[in-house]
Structures are given as C-alpha cells and as structure tokens.
Length: 237
Ligand SMILES: C[S@@+](CC[C@H](N)C(=O)[O-])C[C@H]1O[C@@H](n2cnc3c(N)ncnc32)[C@H](O)[C@@H]1O
Image (cartoon, rainbow, N blue to C red; front, side):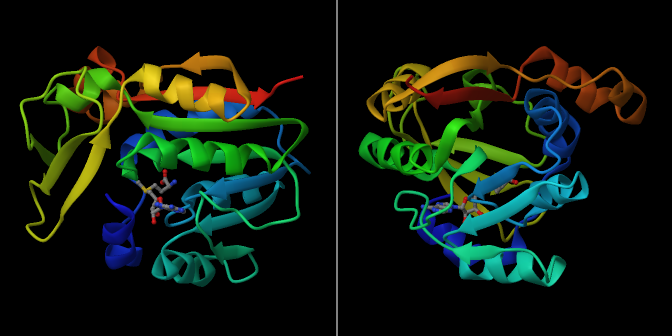
C-alpha cells in the first residue's frame, strides 16, 4: 500500500496469520532473549509484534504514519508507547537494541525513500543494535500462492522491472484494493549500503512442520516458496 492508502485504511488492517506462523517465530530466533531490550517497531501497523515483545519483557515503542493505526495500538495496549511518525524521518532521542521494519519499505515508489527510511532507522540503533528489514520474497510476488489477495501489474511482470506497481484486490472482501512497489534484492542491498549499514544475515522463512496439521494446503504452498525475506543489518564498525 502507498503511504496515502495506509493512512486511509487506518486500523482496518490486521496482522495476517502468515506473519504469526512464519515470520514471528523467525524473528524470535533472530532476536533471542529480548527481556530488558529496547525495541522500536517502525511501521508497527496494529502493534501485534510489539505486544508479543512486551509479553517477553522488552521495552517497546511503536511508530506508524497512520494516526488510526496508532490509535488502534493505543486501544489494544493503553500503557504502551506509540507515536505517529514517518519512518523516513524519525524524530526520537532514544537508541534501540532492535529496530524493526516489517513489510513497510514496499510502500515506497522510489529508492531514495527506501534509503532515507533505512538511514533514519539506522541512526536510532545503539552501538550493538540491529535493524531487521522484512519485505515480500521475489519468488512470492509473481507466484499464485496468496490465498486472500489477487495480484495484477500495470505492466507485464518482470523481476528486473524496478519500481513496478503491484495492484492487489482482496479475493474475499471486495472493499480492499491497494498498491505496492516491486524492487529487486539488489536495490534493497544498495539502499542498506548507502545508508551506512552492513548486512549480517539473510533469512528466508518457511512454515514450521506443525502448520502442516493446521492447514495442509496453505502449508504446502508456503513451504514451496518463501513468502518473505529478512535482512539483519548493523552499523558499520
Ligand atoms: C503491511 S503493514 C505492516 C505492519 C506491521 N509492521 C506488520 O508487519 O504487521 C505496513 C505499515 O507501514 C506503515 N507505513 C507506511 N508508510 C510508512 C511511513 N512512511 N512511516 C511509518 N509507517 C509507515 C503503514 O501505515 C502500515 O501500518
């Protein structure tokens, strides 16, 4: 979704089950023991991951460009710290052990915005802090393994078409239609480097065996193609 679409949709958007089943366990293993750690979720949406971190005794803050999303976070977690803020221009004094950018950078239609966002988040890391960036996996964008969304493109899909507009329409709820932008892995890597960060690790999460029993059809599709890719970055030393 573009930033304007996100502001419009507000808190009508909820964290999907694929994130809870596939991404969250991957983040748990990357982040390890987060008790007492300072975590910033930049583009926190409905705040589901923040609440999970709080349950593990982390000290959390969520920011999002959508006032309604922030309002929703505050309703679900009245004592939590949530602020309306642009990830490209984070105005905070605090430094964090972990800064998270989960499915946010695909909202940006040009690389400068991606670079600005990564730079701004990187500046909020403490000396040993890490930035975790998650975007859809390129193998997922063109494959037909999205159970709820129908995808189309303004032009023919080619992996090498940088900034290609991806249109989504909900298969089940007619009202939901939005836009994302396709970038190549090399574009994200270039932006990470230009922002003065280094990539320490890359993960391509797939579902754990136990989800086979829950829904074999979805498990089979998601195990075939990773739906997301995770970059773990740190400041240059
Ligand atoms: C796909 S949702 C992901 C939410 C959450 N990170 C998750 O993974 O469940 C993208 C979120 O990024 C937010 N967003 C988009 N552009 C932003 C920006 N420039 N600054 C901060 N948040 C932004 C949207 O409002 C939305 O809540």
